[in-house]
Amino acid sequence: MQQFTIHAAKTNLSKLIEAAMSGEEVIIAKGSKPMVRLVPIAQGAFKVGLLKGKLGAGPDFFEPMDAGDLDLWEGAK
Image (tube, rainbow, N blue to C red; front, side, top):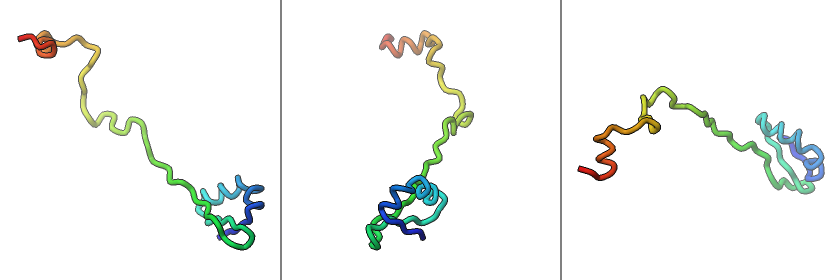
């Protein structure tokens, strides 16, 4: 655990962020009294195209509809 005063934290903020990101516990104190703990925010593992190729072929919305489907869509009988 590392403890820094507010003044030292302002001066070394980039280094303290790097330390917290690497798993070190960083405490910022006012005088000798601990006030806050600097911790990293959990990053989500969002990935674009995660289900690509797993859902099968969907409809092609740019192709013309069949006459029967078009009649159903337009309410014709």
